Image 1 (cartoon, helix red, strand yellow):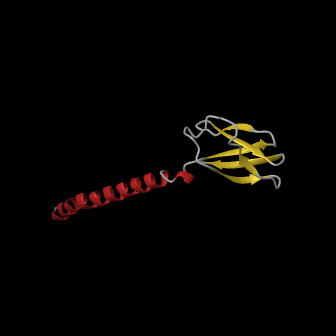
Image 2 (tube, helix red, strand yellow):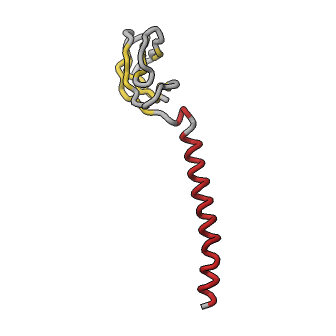
Image 3 (cartoon, rainbow, N blue to C red):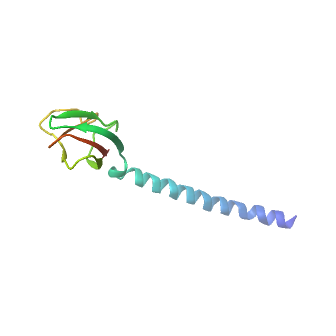
Length: 106
């Protein structure tokens, strides 16, 4: 029975270490979530042309930037800031030629 008591007496210390580990994990996840470029969405297969177009990004906030992750031709895709659009909902894009592109919007 003494063995059982000593096992039980060490349990709170292990529990405390486990709680510290979970707390550290939660803090690490919070810090990753705060990195803007990681907190984004993939917007796939957009048909971007030389005409300015608004695309819904679904971030739930204003976007900060984007990265082209895939495109089917050697055309430049860029934001057209000459058009007024709600940046919390849309990213306004244009290209120097027809291209189908996927973007990581953050």
